[in-house]
Image (cartoon, rainbow, N blue to C red):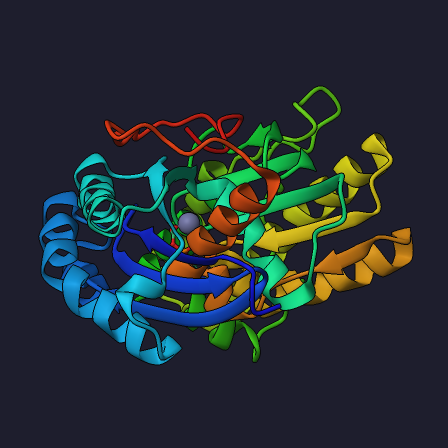
Length: 345
Ligand code: KG4
Ligand code: ZN
């Protein structure tokens, strides 16, 4: 509908500078700049480098988003920004930019939760979210299982990783296999030629007395490293495809089993996936299979919307505007450990 508010969204919680524009549930623009290549040789995101890159990319990325949407800044009705969780210095760049645009345009500002935004983005592709839904967010920085009764104001945490994030495990395993960073895509590709049952890697926190909805990937990562070391010590070649496939299977197995269990336990028949790891082909296929078997409707945004972007923040902003949630105060700050229960602040 043409009279729905146009929302400009800023995302700078990690290494992606994202500026998105939506009208209601319609995606108008999704401009992205990334400092990924600058972190590659460190094998992980360096906060200072990310902050500086956001600063340099910010204004050009806003201009690209406006051009892509065919809009002027004065057409914007509201501004949304990730105010946490994430890297403090990186978040601050986005918050400062969003405040400046909101103030200059005299429009309301909404500081939003990055994780809730990962859920909201699916509405741009698949329409209004069924509520309640279960959401599983798996990326390089987070692994969370959420119960979402009302995305605009009530999100509950069911479980999270107790050590590494799922994407972090992909990145670390790729490193020991000699594959490039970020490790998810090359492992996904290598696994296509491998046997997922070649090596029985451990499934973290799946014992009878373990927390049902929490994740642990550090033991799996160590098991893979040990397995490779043993092969190398024995002077045998490392079957990269089999290791990749078996590791990927262990991650996908645990994630999908816990997500489906959460749906069943809470009587919820809609599951949404998000975060960079949701781009994984085996995770998607296994989730599809297990959800179908359990009568659960699975919603997964396209890979481009699964990874960090500005459109997801604009999408959540749009939800908040529609729900009549109060905007943020002008002294909005960044909170690196913003709890998931705080959808906006
Ligand atoms: O959501 P994202 O872009 O950024 C944050 O970390 O917030 O997620 C990046 C993570 C990286 O760890 C990357 O290795 C992983 O997502 N990833 C994948 C795939 N594509 C990206 N992991 C597994 N399979 C993939 N196809
Ligand atoms: Zn993210």
